[in-house]
Image 1 (cartoon, protein in one colour):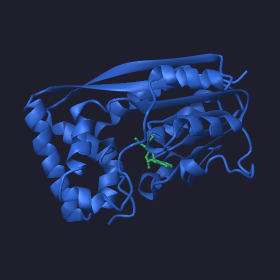
Image 2 (image 1 turned 90 degrees about the horizontal axis):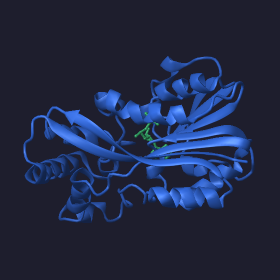
Image 3 (image 1 turned 90 degrees about the vertical axis):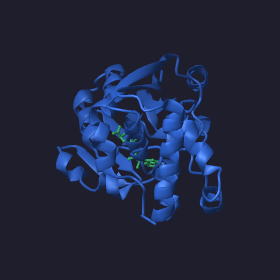
Length: 264
Ligand SMILES: C[S@@+](CC[C@H](N)C(=O)[O-])C[C@H]1O[C@@H](n2cnc3c(N)ncnc32)[C@H](O)[C@@H]1O
């Protein structure tokens, strides 16, 4: 079983499509010269540096749980940016050792952390007055690309193999208005919350399989032995193509929620 299911090369196969939501999230963040920022689930670190530059930050920390994703992060190194292998769940440290931040950002990562009310509460404790919180999460769980993975996981032999390995599905992402209400309840009167559909023109429906192999299927890769994972992907592929057909090109509509909020 691999140490972690993330593979930067697979993830970057759709680099341009995956970067657009980050660019849109960045546009919501106000530059704050000299600020202290953190990027939760920073991946390869490329976008952490873009965040740092956009904010004109003094210090930006990128954390990610995956050693594979962080492996080459030094190539993006610029002064004031550093990376660490760490689980978002451990942030902020309850003993206060992380200190406080002016900007907390998380692009396409919080969907892997459970209980978003608790997560947002915890992040708020690490944010300075007037600090900005910005995150983007997928909201595409009703699309066959996501629903089929859940269905296949519930079938033999995968259900048995996955039973003791922890739930591989992403955490429950809230509805946009639930994020708005939760953030308001935490004191964020200044906020932007929106649902956006990103239309990706892929070469064919087959490419959806390559897309999810870089993200949604990573926990299945972590939990199944290589042969079972291959069998899982094959059943997923045949089920998905049975539903979507063999379309060339395939227009893949991908819903995402973008949230920006600033503390009073
Ligand atoms: C879809 S990628 C996004 C990476 C980067 N933010 C970007 O936009 O390119 C999700 C990242 O979240 C990381 N991740 C998932 N669960 C995590 C957790 N509990 N703690 C830290 N990182 C996590 C993964 O390792 C992966 O690098």
